[in-house]
Length: 482
Image 1 (tube, rainbow, N blue to C red):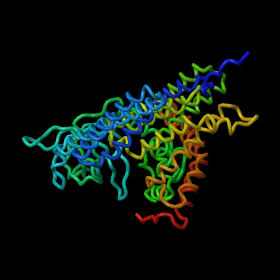
Image 2: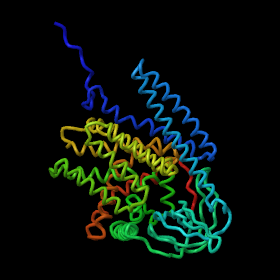
Image 3: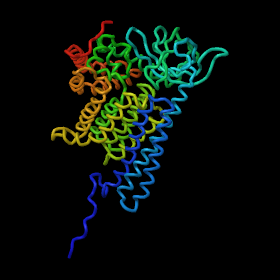
Image 4: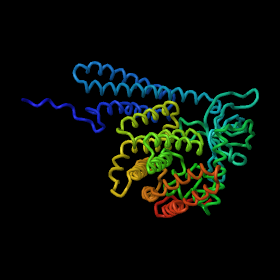
């Protein structure tokens, strides 16, 4: 009697032959194609992007034809060619979208006024950030260019450089001012603006701008009560991206040491916050559904505290997917969800999708999806609870995954950036979790928020010390005196 023919080996995720996981991963290659095509076309002229779209369309047609012909001979070849055809097709769509955006940008009235002065009506879209020399840069959406009979409508997101009167404007504030239109920093980007006068506010912000602004104001007061020296300004910077209280010297040290990225809200921030909530819920015996509800509420609270800016919403989305991977039985679905987010953001906002901040969030989240669970199993010890190992794995994987991007982008400039980032890795989650809790608690119970902020003092001291030491080592970029 012969043994029955062996069936397909069970997949690690529990699916025969791994087919469900394979289906979940089919979106990854087209997403990579869209991202790469957009990165290539974003700095190209509209004609070049359109030509790329035509070439990719032809390649998709050829691959689809070959796929149909290979179907009778090899199912594997047919599927591979089908995926290739899909990747080329969505790449063609991305190139076409970028060609249309490039054409629209070239036709915007601001582009015709580079080097000239004009009046604008705009909406503040994010919180201001300090720049060297005492000014600030404010993200705005220009809606009207010119005044009186010469006014022309057309929306364009730009960065406005300003001084007096522009600090502290909440997102959603509508303003009028006179500006000088500046050359774009690189091809494919919109021009910049330099304010020539203080803003004239024509309409105040809605609650989505007022609430985060109030939280920021109270958190600055809490930090000043709880901490001394540079630490009182560093805490709002790390938690909310509010760098207004950080001295120019300290900002330069963090840039020179490759730690400046810590002041930007990313998917890692949401991962730490939601991970701490999951850890606390698991420690108190809350079930799986209860932990998911708690994590969702923590994520919504994080967005409300930091502010619903586009960068924060994208960070929340990628961070949520990363945490979902820890509880998932297989990595395919979270990875497919991440690919879908990248695909949508790349098609809707190519400039943001190819920016360093978004790439950092995506890389960190992809690494969490793929490696967080194996690393958690590696670091787990008999004396270590499982949730603690999970959160520790999140910290390790997120930091190691983003370091190459930081080096390649120049944010981790200098030979000491890598060891500096590794050295501060244990302190970053402490500051993020306790600081976010303090920021959320501040409007309700200021004394309690002061206690939580004071608990961040050792971690902040370590961050400041590492930045100062690394910035002073041989080979680090020279810090220019203010």
